[in-house]
Image 1 (spheres, rainbow, N blue to C red):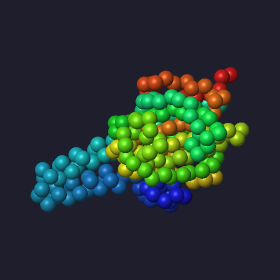
Image 2: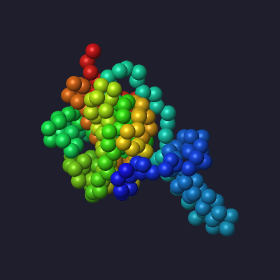
Image 3: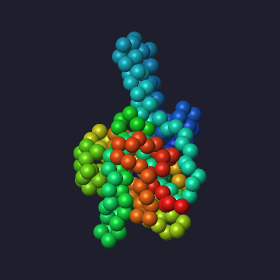
Image 4: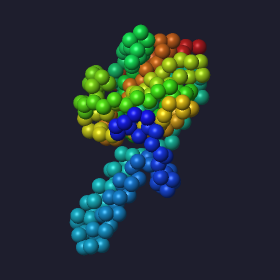
Length: 233
């Protein structure tokens, strides 16, 4: 576990909040915020401050929508990489794997606007090799250099064949908190919920050259479902 605002390694969310979150279809992190606003609004209404109370209650609705967490169904096809984020493909390039100048790989970047679902999912199944948080700036997440200068969280993972993959959660101009529920040596399944980034951000995917990139610039993808890389059969 590393310091900072990344939640990797922290205790599991409150069980009551988790149950409420599943019941209403939003991420656990959004329950306290949206329900808290709704309760405050109702108290203000009961105190006679009806207009202010109504505004506060209404504000709880877009907050809850931001934290929406719909079910997703990963493809059953083997040897694929799926998107870890909802949004638009903003970069496809060949780069060095983070922290290793010798290892080259594909990078596919997905930009999430505030309107997208922000729950992140595992791009492959396997084992978490490392979780590394890096403090940084809060530049616009769609900029090419955002993954080098912005607040970010790198999750390195290996599949059953020992191939290395990476997923970097990058904070954007509005994002001020990265949530990661993983720690080193955790076993993960493809499409598993692994965290989220609050209020607009970007996710970079890194995968080996033996995989072909299957998406194009500007394409819209869905976390946990859209295939972004595959080994040709």
